[in-house]
Amino acid sequence: MKKNILTLLIFVGVLLIQIFFNEYIEILGVKPDLILIALLISALYVSPVFLIFLGFVFGLMQDWLMLTPLIGLSPLLKTIFVFTAVKSVQKFKVFPNIVLLSVELLLLFLYFVFYNSISLLRIGLSFSNVILNYSIPEFLYSGILFIAFYYLVFYYKKNRE
Picture 1 (spheres, one colour):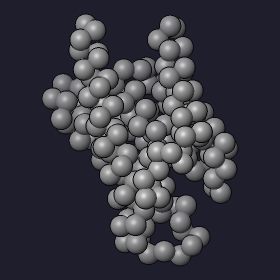
Picture 2 (cartoon, helix red, strand yellow):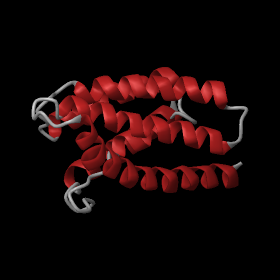
Picture 3 (cartoon, one colour):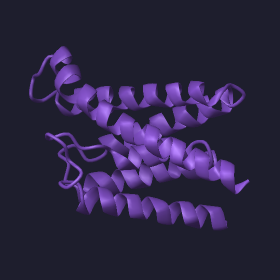
Picture 4 (cartoon, one colour):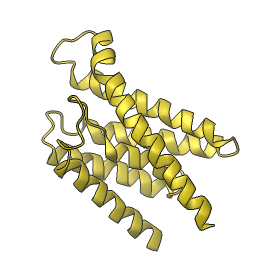
């Protein structure tokens, strides 16, 4: 119970940072998805059902508070990708951390591909244009933050034990 409350508070903090400091963490028009990063890292430590619930709720709050044009796309994709992350963590837990890190980075990339493809569908951009101009830059920025936070949490967890 205490772990779930702490996790919930961390996600509220990440959501507040994502909303109020979004223009300050933007680099050349690219903004990371901090909620997704926190969800993927939490897949290693938080109960699966609670994490999937958090993915849906915080995805919906992110859409609603950031006034995205397609409300519901983010919670849908976050729920699907968090579920996939939880299943991959259960399956690859016996492998070294580099395998888990690679799988979660692949999920992060695929999330941006799906999200950008669906959200930019109405504009009529080609798929390669969406990948090159939107998904790859967002993945690179979010991926670097993901790796940094992944190893920060891993180092903290290792030294705490």
